[in-house]
Amino acid sequence: MRLIFAGTPEFAAVALRRLAEAGHQIALVLTQPDRPAGRGMRLQESAVKRLARDLGAPVCQPRSLRLDGRFPEDAATARQAMADARADAMVVAAYGLILPQWVLDVMAQPGPHGGAALGCLNIHASLLPRWRGAAPIHRAIEAGDTQTGVCIMQMDAGLDTGAVLLRESIAIEHRGSQADTTGTLHDRLAALGGELIVRVLAQAASGTLVATAQPADGVCYAEKVSKAQARIDWNADAERIERSIRAFDPNPGAWTSLGSDVIKVWRASPHPAPAPSHAPPGTVLAADDAGIVVACGSGALRLTALQRAGGKRLPVADFLRGQPVEPGVRLGPDGDH
Image (spheres, rainbow, N blue to C red):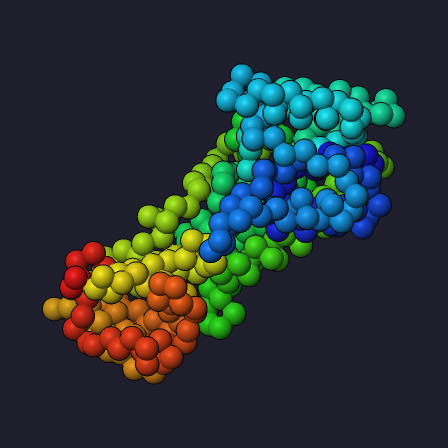
């Protein structure tokens, strides 16, 4: 098929690569503008833009798609590019811009071969209607969900409310060395999303595609994760904090304060022994090569991989050699400063 693809990060690039490998023609790629990143804050191209260039696909990078917004000229340029592309469908994956009604209307027009329009198809990394919104992978791990997956959705004017064309679930691992982080789960879901969108387009071509409305029950929203939300609340129970640490890995990274320093925590596990009742949450109970044990609102947590500002992730033994931590010190906003 002749496709428009809209996406920005690596999650989307995986799907774009899979569509190209399956023989679909990429008539146009929409992706976010280049952004400053890294220590030098140099402009960086998105993963999708880099791949589109390798594929020889034309790229459009509007700052907004709203014709009545701050950048109407960008939206008008994108609208003309979409019309000129004469695509059979638009595939959307982690694009980062809200699609206004005019985009849905353009894609509702018959394709270049006069067939029924497929419209805008979204690759969404959750089992809708659970975790509609911007951060479904983070929120599924944080909540302790045991299952997640990918839905291919027919986009409408609502926020992830469209009919589901295909879904497939995978397990989330919460125990042991194989416990999922957002990073590991992202990679598995990205690969699954690429496979499912190819299957949906094949079903559309054969006339076997079936759309199923989302149920009204079970709706919840995955709000975007902020750095402030990634600050560890030691008043929470140990298992919830451990899930949050994995949910915010690799971005933005769960963090706490140690005196005046900001410390990121990358790996932890609930400590089997209960914390002493007299130890306020955030109190360091023990610190050795096996881990830094910290009292929580309920239970205790053993921290095993940490990072100081400007440093790199370190096993706890290496971290402690560079920054000793004494029992009795408190982590977090109530600690010693």
